[in-house]
Image (tube, rainbow, N blue to C red):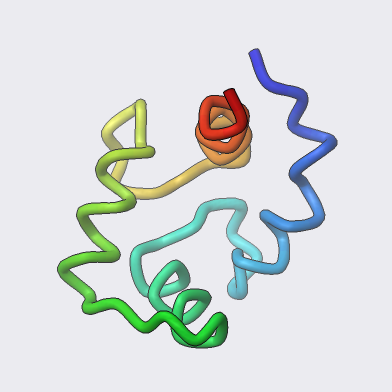
Length: 72
């Protein structure tokens, strides 16, 4: 399992409403700020690809696991 502490600060920046989950809208806002805007449909698809428990949101654990897998 990925070390969530390593990714918590970044996760918290993306989690703008502080509910400990990243939604498709939050992901979309992040991409817009980064200069690579995506549609809500694209953001929803990205969330689905990371969301391992099927709740439609990205938890810190899912976020960390995704970033760890992307590093390898």
